[in-house]
View (tube, rainbow, N blue to C red):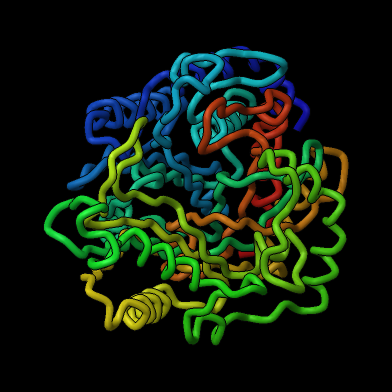
Length: 460
């Protein structure tokens, strides 16, 4: 492997230039005005796959943003087939004043590459492309067949990946799935993520009037929807940090003794997560659980946004006609998003029953939780690859966020999913000044190349 790893080291500047060009394209899938940019990014990625030797590559448009796929065949017919998944779309760049450099003009500072998409997820997709190129240029062929699927709607609500899998899923037929869209628990600590939480996302509107009215004239006589909504939201958690929706915890899987021990062993990294969030201290949260357990292995409910009435400078004495809130719930095994959505909507209607308001609930997004079987051969192969790259043992962790495609892949193919990521908790993947540690870019490329070597010896 010295030749493959040496190629990556010698061509690091080339790899970095390629990632920089990739990140210059503002592929914001959630913003309609960037639709052309998302397609431009898909075309750019397709071109890169072809340059780096894909025997098959295609752009698969749907009503939404396209899926880009590429295939590299192994040098032997009995080699395992590995599906590598990622996404080329990125988050919006709100609060531009908080960015120290323009989000789509990548810049190197203090050992990091700054720019939107550098870590989530263009940088991690590019690691795999560079590892593939290193194998091809040094050995002439890959030790495994790689089928790469990169979507353009991971950061927004879309159905293109579902449509692609319905049409082409049987052609993929992987022996393992590798997803590099996760983080390490700390710098220098190689990490395999064993599970991710699911998601329910709702928009709630409370309306009482056709239009805003004078608070002096009507105050005390008509319902104030902002106050009704605030009371409702406040009641969704009790004093112990527990969600009060009936049945919310009924299907929550208990932690095993081994899982508790592993989470306790990672407590030394909790302070780094607090600093990454910029919080003065962790909240008390759900009583009886550590911060990592609450973030990774317990379900949560959070208010993501509130909007009502007059919020500009100055004074305007009104009772607002309506109030809105957006609520996310992170789910754990074995919670079902549809059941949680139904229970939440029913509970909200009960809480507003008898009030002179109209309640509407809009279901915006959902995803199922995922928990890996750590005893699969592919995960053992990933452990060995990371040890060879980093020179230290891998830790097992979990992720509080969601990758919607993860459970879809697991259910469709019935094969192990290896969450093999190289981000860091403080790299602002969804915030201003997103960045990727260049050392992790280097180690990530090497780890991917080593993973292909280890997976080539995997017994199907």
